Image (tube, rainbow, N blue to C red):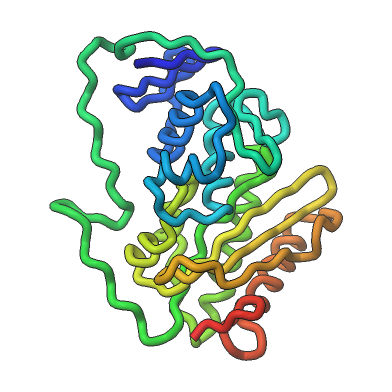
Length: 276
């Protein structure tokens, strides 16, 4: 089955998204979310619907869910500002509002190609590796911050914030910090907090989002317990919706503010939650 909208074709059998004749790269979870929205386009889809239908009921944070929706919009040339195809209805959910035409069969023949196994970034040939043992000291992974600006050109800024926080935390002797190369394997994916914790061998995850609209900048973070899947604390830095000045200055202040929030008082912490 193929779903045609504007100049895009979503091939369910081949798990491909094409614009015209060109293949558009898309992460597996982003594809699943886009397919779910299109197949349920006659009604508003709630957060619980998405978690049940796309993540099979696993625990998914709000930031990860929003990041996946944002990635789906970018894949089909939409944005959070325009919402031409994927529309958010405040406090209700989201809905695919584009005109869709259904065509039976695959775009390259009726026989669908074998569906590739969706392997975890840290799995090895022959099956997933056993979960690493947690380090003796507090361990944390900083996941790629979501770009909530609706502008793909701002990806560099949200990635820079993530990299700066990783470098800053790495300087703190009481932390075991996962390297950028490992955490960026999850960029653009809706993740299961506990699964990522097991894959990376950490107790805590830090995730967040960056939103720049005109002269204003908003950076939001939340600290998660990767063992229990619980939300431990969050912060908005530097200031809520304050004027944007320069990328270098704002990145430095954002990095410093969040590092201080996580490691304030000489002990690893986030808000009122102590990491130990």
